[in-house]
Amino acid sequence: MKKSVYFGKSLSAFCFAAALAAGLTGCGASSPLDPKNPVSLTVWHYYNGSQQAAFDALVEEFNDTVGREKGIYVEGYSQGSVSDLESAVRDSIAGKVGADAMPDIFSSYADTAYEVELAGALADLSVYLTDEELEKYVASYIEEGRIAADGTLRIFPTAKSTEIMMINKTDWDKFAAATGASLESLTTIEGITATAQSYYEWTDSLTPDIPEDGKAFYGRDAVDNYFVIGMRQMGVEIFHVEDGKVTLNVPEAELYRLWENYYVPMVKGYFGAYGSYRSDDVKTGDILAYTGSTSSAMYFPNQVELDESSYTIDYIVMTAPIFEGGQHSAVQQGAGMVVTKSDKKHEYAAVEFLKWFTQAENNLEFGCVSGYLPVLKEANNVEKLDQVIEANQLSVAPKTYDCLTTIFQEMEGMILYTNKSFENGSAARKVLKFHLADKAAQDRAAVMDALKQGKSLEEAAGPYVTREAFKSWYDAFCEALNDAVKK
Image (cartoon, rainbow, N blue to C red; front, side, top):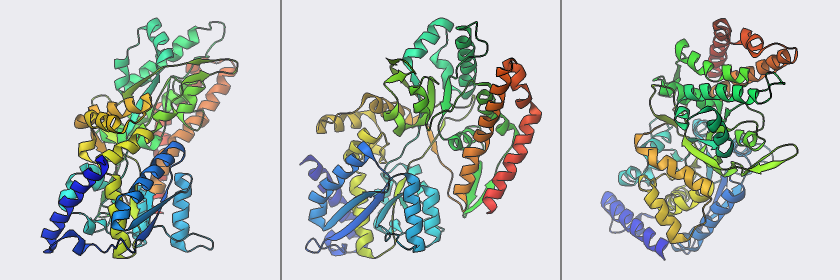
């Protein structure tokens, strides 16, 4: 009943605004829907496990309440992974043999949505939303969705995320007690690098009979985010986009700071990347801390599992570190929903469902399970979250709750950022994601071979961390990035 009343108030306000704008006597007159002849909508997404269960439960609730009243029936289908979903969409657009017809709604990141928009396959959502409705959403989320050439809305923000840092508190406490290390040092990228070196040296000292066997302290998911947001923190927009055209900004000094605080500690073994995700590396005890998506909180392990033993660990959640002296900018990520261009009835119905899904109570209910951030301004605070949890008697994993509240408490002083979409944006992001990371992994392997031959770490890593080595990488990186953009 509480949800129905909440929606009724929102619907009444929308009806009144629409009637005034269109010169009509009531909301129903402008609606193409007929409850006696309901329209069916298909939604493709990439949610799995508990996230899919939460989404399906909300879809069922919509169908049983508002959908039944308005004449809308929604069916959701998981396509597996993000890449599987993107492939299915591309196959549908290309009309490949055996491909399913395009869904009415599908989850999409901005780069993929931009490709579909260039093919002329996305609906203009602006015509179904008033200025008053748009104003309720976090402004940067709406701005991200304005990927059309004329600036109209194509991506409906439904669930977003940013990055946080999670730490194995149990082993951190041992390290801190022995060395005096402070969590305060982990608020900057440079502090992370210095702490990681200290941790490597401390763990190496625990086995004096085995030289250079120190352990990595830190890792990060999504190295492309490190480039985009790291540069932004230093006042540089690596992909500056105007009218769909991109200008690359790759100043050498700023990129040297990125190289010095990712590649160098990776090559020296202060940072690590071993499993598919850094939460996997925490679980195997190979690292203590990582930067990853807020939605990854649920995957942070409850214990470290070694070859012949395991032990329970506690955790710490912190905001992601920033470059020393930099802006408090944080990555804005997470797929939105796009609506396939079809007819007014289907497009209108799709937007009605998305507006319902993003109401504060519904969006927070989904976020409590998924770790995603809600998209309405009013929903991004701890008080509202607690109200929803209490009203719906939700069981929320402590790690997810701590992750959400940590971000909510920092939202006002945080600048959420993502670059605008452009042609070949996906290819350019792949260069950011793999070019330096792959070189770091390759060169770390060479350093490990040199260590096995009896060289010290400084001797083994020395040739790879010179200014000349950076310049060689920098030139290759700029060339690869330019090639990707010009494809």
